[in-house]
Length: 303
Image (cartoon, rainbow, N blue to C red; front, side):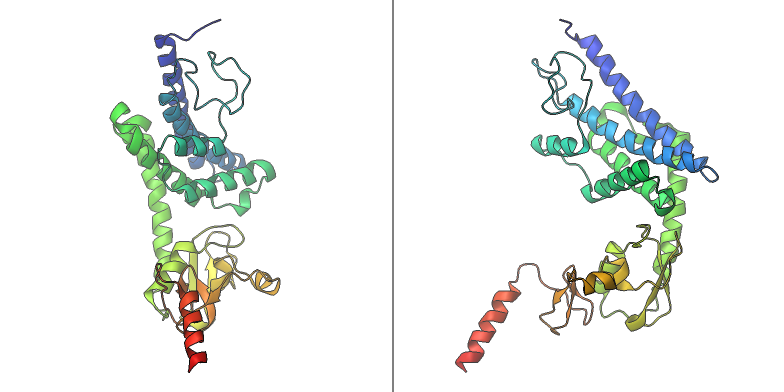
């Protein structure tokens, strides 16, 4: 039975980290070449997500140095492999998240990760490249990569820009700037809309997505809040309204999928993410509004 000695384990770690770096670099290079090549877009997403997941696995490998199994946290769960050998199957995304929780390690921005993985899977399985907003997805993915690297790996391997190489880092920044400029332009289009409150505007900005391509590059057409018209600046679907981009379509409402609830201030059934989109009231997280309403009801009966 072969047992990995320390120099060999160091080589395994080095190879894993090098594969992560190569995937990150290839993801950027593929995106730069993807304007006229759909396959490059798919490869860009595939490589960039692989780079992120390999960094997660590298961190888990660093935490796995047990005598009985030096690959404990990256080996696929319930594996029947020899515990002293390099694993043929490694952890899934679900297992990665579970192992990080078990180790009390933080995976920053899980919602970003879930969105990226779900979109990657759609692209891989259904070739839905035209329904996916590649640039924002890549920006979010590289945001996760850089944030994770700076949290757990920077002290071991130097600054992030040195790890990925400066030319690649500059191209990441360029792509971030393109997306940031587009998003800033979209947000500015809402400047003249009279929202019921700033909280309503913030909820909209933080949660809006095109129902067709999932992009958050949503532009406002007009100034009337009551009849606001929105357009997605990635897939150019128009005639969207606030509820469309907050994942509440007219069909959802008709089919009984309306997730809004009553506002304790104006009593309109229009509270979304703790804010009333009718009057602008922001609910307080530590108040039990149902209990207060019930107590008021009892008091009124006593009167």
